Image (tube, one colour):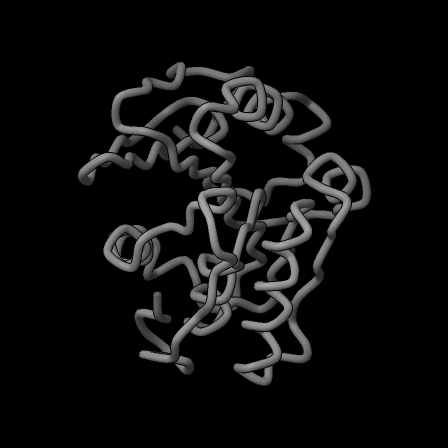
Length: 187
């Protein structure tokens, strides 16, 4: 696993052993960031269920102003800290190791891009997080023209609406898919 582009291009990232963490593949990250390219520089980026931090680190590598990482699995959080340290990234990020709910409770907006990648089988995590950003409280955290992107199994279809969030794009790549959501007034 490596950083695809930007300041840290081609630098290797580590992941914990075992199947507890499923990092977003280099190829899928490249697809994601090709789509997001004009939005990443100077953005405020949220990486939920961050695992190794590969997606948020990619955002930092491509010029994001700040990245908030949320990951409560200890082995993944250790790998993320190791990756950030190896790249000598010491500023421009916040790491919340108590999980997504703890980060969302203290997050202040506006944020431009939200990426969530819970375990594929954790359907309730998708529903609760997407419903949060589709609620009045979550909507207040989103900047105008914000995007919320969910990585999920290509065999699992997410709803097309979560509160005021509306799915505007679906990209499938192998076993993975990316669903893009925008607040209704932006869609």
